Image (tube, rainbow, N blue to C red; front, side, top):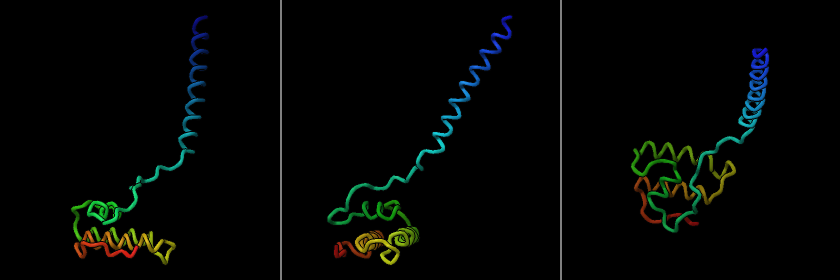
Length: 110
């Protein structure tokens, strides 16, 4: 007499747990994708090495090849001919020049 009662309780508990498990899985599948966290601040008046590294997405002490590769990757995504802004392109170029040591002053016309 007790065995059917316990079996029924186990089946009911399994059904409820399955229902909530399915709901949790559907909520997990429909969540928005996790986007990469970018630097949210604006540009400083005079670009620093830290800001240049943040713009290019590299560390402050990185090899020249990595800087050039990062510059190319960021410029492809933000080039004015591909719908990017001239302002962003000038800031990206300024960041590359600063990281490569080509200029210490701000050469951006913006």
